Image 1 (cartoon, helix red, strand yellow):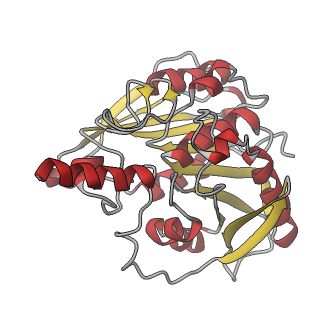
Image 2 (image 1 turned 45 degrees about the vertical axis):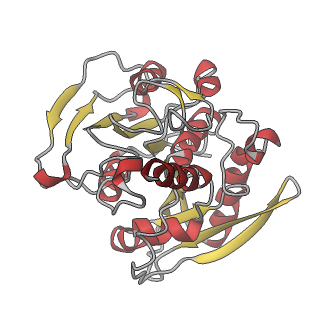
Length: 324
């Protein structure tokens, strides 16, 4: 009976494609709530949530897209879970939380049973349309548009770097790799800065690459090894020097993780590459609660706040010289 119970829980997590932070978000209090919007792209009605601090200055503000994981993930869930709006209000940037098509992003893996993939939904066009709409309603710094996301949202961040480098100057995928088809043709027209956060013990998106999903579950495409995807950015950005590494302070010895950071010298156009590799880390968002049992998704690091570190990285990236 115990094995059956675990299998049933696994099935529930897989239906939600391994990143739908619901349980942990239900009790979080959201002080700043974004505005729901919709737009029609290729005949499909697409939705998203935008938050812009009411007291924003006259100067154009950076725009940060935050992408949910696959399955039953949503913009509102991720807005509550990450609390990126609090950070946006304090630091002065705009946040945008889009909704995937029927809960998923067409990130290039080509999974037949995911409609966003089988119908070849043009999510890159969706992002371009959102940038255009938000830019009409708010003052957006076109040289500082960024994307981050977890799992399926992390995979999609890589696709945006590959196919919309004229728009996005930096991406920060969290436990989300690069689909092999995206990697095979990866050659952005503009340099894109990269910040990867990946658990070395992720049971769903393997650090060493290969098939996505639980070993005994339904497979969801293939990805490149984490280090291989990073190398593709290094090559494109003309970064050939070695990285510098350090271990972050172990602020929470009880979480069972240690984080090693690696950073490289700047490349073309001031582009940057940074990597946080979490030893014993699972399919989780560092600094946020577990959204499923640890036995299913692994350990979460409490040694750093991923939201804070991502914004710190985005903030350090130079404005794009050839913004749209």
